[in-house]
Length: 176
Image (tube, rainbow, N blue to C red):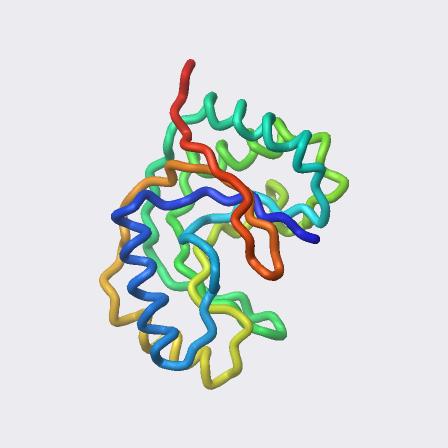
């Protein structure tokens, strides 16, 4: 079963993303159900949670929150398209992502390739598994919302999927 390692938006900015998802759902668009607004750092096809959990907790103590600006709407044009909010890519965000993968290098064998440094496209999923009609609706609806959404990525956690099940999360408060 796959596991997503996610950075969660602070309460205020998460609420803005939730309002977008609600409007999409009410309009018949498939949303990313059962997840908190987030930016995924990695997905692992399998994961030894007993080993990974304390390591993630230690990592979270070394990191402070990251400022984020969800500045545009993007889309992955896969067989089942995904519409997302794209954060402005900053040196801090890219450094955090690389430091995460360096810290958890022992788990690389199970990592999904397109989340690796140099291939990663940071995104906050709004809608997924879309028909062509839903893609049009999703873009029409999301473009009515005011961007950018400014906030912070202040927690890190693990989501098991599918079905989506939040396993645990930690606040990122640097103790260094």
